[in-house]
Length: 132
Image (spheres, rainbow, N blue to C red):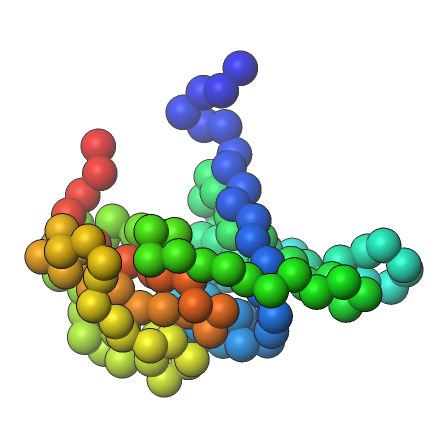
């Protein structure tokens, strides 16, 4: 049964886990929760990041034998509800760590936040609104 405390994992491919780590850990400030390197055929390189003690984590995968090219669309969003305007220093840090600030496809996100593409082209939205 799914409850409010059920742990959530969101997974997607990456072509460069080191670049992803720079963006999500050094840039956004998430913690590395797990990392592994493919040591046997059929295994993947994994990088799991998330907030310490959080109920969710973000898993990035890379299969060295059969890499999956990320195919992000303008609607593939990872939204973080900050409850206040995004700090420009955070936005600058994300750009310095491999992100690209972009206008959102949906003007709602430009009105309520900032959109930054990660090194694989997926979009992170830092939203000034709250959720809940």
